[in-house]
Figure 1 (cartoon, each protein chain N blue to C red):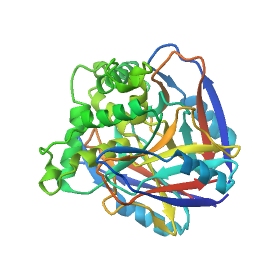
Figure 2: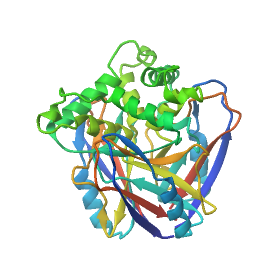
Figure 3: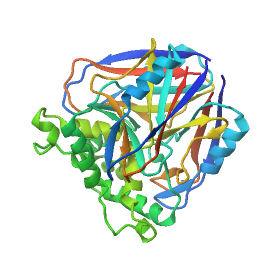
Length: 136
Length: 136
Length: 136
């Protein structure tokens, strides 16, 4: 077994945004030529997250709206005495900075409607990083 | 080190449902005879999730009720212009399609009250898949 | 490749509390001398969680307040007919008992503002366990 990693750098254009990174994950799995193992996708950020779901325009709006419903922008947060992005940190904490995927017979195991997204929660940013790791 | 995987196929009977898959995970760990490593449990679905918690009938009702409270069924979602299950996708996105567990001395590390569940969010379905992977 | 693990035992002092365990994770990565791999942090508890975010006093208050907002203490839960901590189980189920991190060039990949926390949801407890696992 071996461990491989790759870094992807992404610029984002709005405060909250979903960026589909599925093709980068698939390319990495293909390049590594690992038959069976584990792919982990991580962001080294406290105001971004990683999720997996369908890439449908309406659903993307629903996900971003639900983030606002559960973690609303507000001046009331204690963290906002020294900053203005407590809602971004809260959404990132609950959504999580990482998701794992199984690799079986050289293929990433995922559903037809299961794409992988970077979730920008405090953009726009010129430089968000996504780390892909495979052990297998 | 080696990587092992196994697929479990499950039928579900209601729209939202918790299915305890702990014994399948324990059997897989036993069969693999790995001393130390990592177990990852994943669903390749955009309207299902994996969680770990207590298997108590009342708590199961509370978990399903909290899913409805945070991700209510509604005709208002943008995704529901083309489908009727935006709430299922939202709950799956936030809960996550995967959970990881440590294997130590041939045992799955988990608490007394920590069972593993498939969370059906858009059932009933005749064929839900759960993938188990061990690297170790 | 090899698999390593370590257990940390922690006492907590209030019902809900964030305990920064970043230095324990960093020390474990340093001690294992793994160049590339995966660190997984797990709690074997149904009323505790693991998250990653900024260690800022105000934000810690915001995270705990948001847990109460989304998973309020209440006597109305079905689980509370036999216990009094349904809210703790619910928050643990949604936050998750585990987070994964990539190790690259002997370093834990994390952001400047991305610390690792045990989330106590039903304390105080004299003995909470955190498991660290590295495969790589």
